[in-house]
View 1 (tube, chains in turn orange, blue):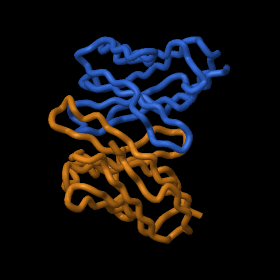
View 2 (cartoon, chains in turn brown, red):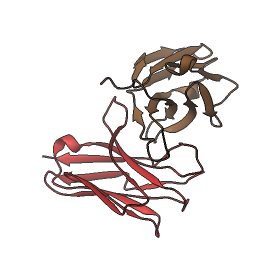
View 3 (tube, chains in turn red, cyan):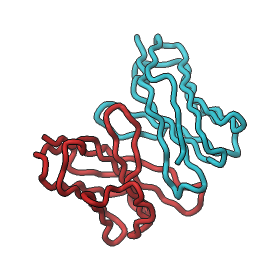
Length: 116
Length: 113
């Protein structure tokens, strides 16, 4: 079974430019997460989707970040405009949540963003 | 939100020795405690998890223990091998955090042959 797929794996842009990341979750998983991982730290949740609905986006900087999950499958995370401090790894994870005990999260390889 | 402390930040052991990483958390209602292994350039990989109704769980060379009273849990790796070298993260989820995992800062484990 294929895992979580993310693209691109690496992205280098200049500040003030837009950037987008794409995620394809594990087949059949209804819940999708975007995490931010700064160097030397653990992942931090940006947004969580249940099917196509964003149910937890309290940590998403909405002035420059946006996300969508059309048809409840693939998801795109966008930054516009990018700032130097956005340099980090952006991780996507997915899980099949049918009860409170079945929310194991599986991560993709991440997209490493460098803003110059 | 949840406050997760992880220690040590770095750990070096000789091949064959045991390694122990500890995490503490602040919300006594937290009920799910996974451990992830992250190798360079890769995403975190789940290696073991435990729920609050269990005190200990073992999977071959890896075990996790949970002390709900003291609000801490530990990862134990026995008979370490060089391929165990990676960054290990603990995480915590509570019933009120809607599926959000709170991660520790990670432990860089190095196993010397």
